[in-house]
Amino acid sequence: MRVEYREEPCKSALSPVKGMHFQWSLNPYMGCVHRCTFCYVRAFEQRADRPADDRYGRSIRVKVNIIEQLRVELSRRGWRREQVAIGAATDPYQPAEGRYRLTRGCIEALGRARSKFNIITRGPLIVRDVDVLVAAAERCDVSVSFSVPTLDEDVWRRTEPGTAPPAQRLRALRVLIDAGINAGVNVAPILPGLSDAPGQLEAVVRAAREAGATHMWAGLLHLKPGTREHFMESLARHWPEMVDRYESLYASGPYASKAEQQRTLALVDSLRLRFDVRDRRPRPLKPPSPPRQIELFAS
Image (cartoon, rainbow, N blue to C red):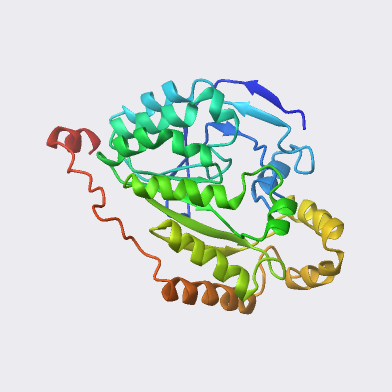
């Protein structure tokens, strides 16, 4: 697949977020070559009148000045070092990062500013940045979440065509854990009838535990306009026998029924408890308290 990379400066690095566990979003790139069929960002793209279909992921915006802009924003007197999520709208470790190193530079800037952050990724390339992650974790709270919704090879290949194999992500998780980084697994999105069988979910939780995951979160697929059309087209192509079930499950909106969600999430939670997924790092990194002058500066 031919991909266009557009080097365009950004006016701001941090975007405010409401209703989430983090207050700010940071995305060094816009667009994602992973092209996951279930990607919720497709819904945002459709609302912005940009391609949400098979064309999504063929044009990537590279925010070439984002490191410098981030440093400016972190130095402002009003910055309160609230939680920053890196990768909420695009994977910060997609292949472009190998060349541009923007995510790496942003991690360095956040660490120096003692601003806590979490990273969401499917990219094993993150192991390249163990050094800056460790340095940042000595100054602020740092966490990493690897998205591993399934280990089923057929489901992975058909729904996440541009991603590295799940096993590679788990190996990357092990590297981060061994370095002392707080790193866990997001079992999401779980696809009803495709990746929610007890044996499939057990395989993911077991592998996460073996890799040393410090935490785990799970969520079911949601289908907002833009994402829904593309996912259903892919479903009809690869699993036509599942189309009626999904039309029924998501007949009333973008979310599966509460009963479906409760059943699946309860199963994952029971597996998490069974395999005792928790922080087992022998010496978790505990950032020191910021110097007093930093406290005054941020107030």
